[in-house]
Length: 128
Image 1 (cartoon, rainbow, N blue to C red):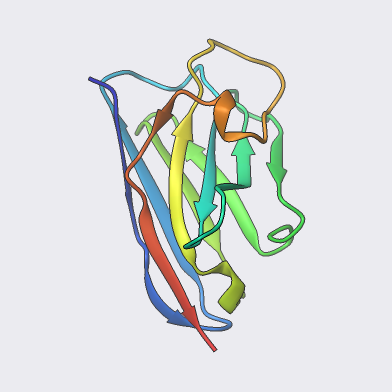
Image 2: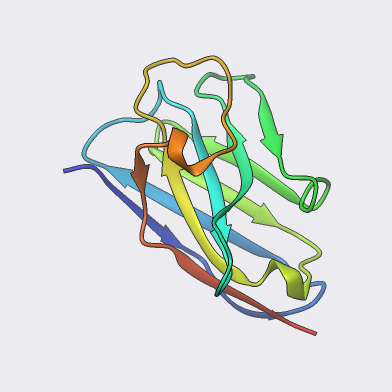
């Protein structure tokens, strides 16, 4: 019954920006950590960013996106966002929204197996 739906992907040129959204339904995730992962063809799913459940909580970023991507959430709308700036061809991947199922967990996780719920993904393609 829990559903995460990503949107906002597309085809852009290097240096462009995209804003991904993840709309959650079936339960409120205001008390749960959430994050973004990405997966390119033939590669494993890799961590992009994660954010704590509470206002003023921590955000965590992969080194490859730090300084370019910003994760945020609007708990009133039960929605997660990923603002992606200065996109590079190596950012090309399917981007997945994810949510934890442990209520008010303190520490952010970087491995896919630590998260319970996943969206179907949205394709981001960055041309050079």
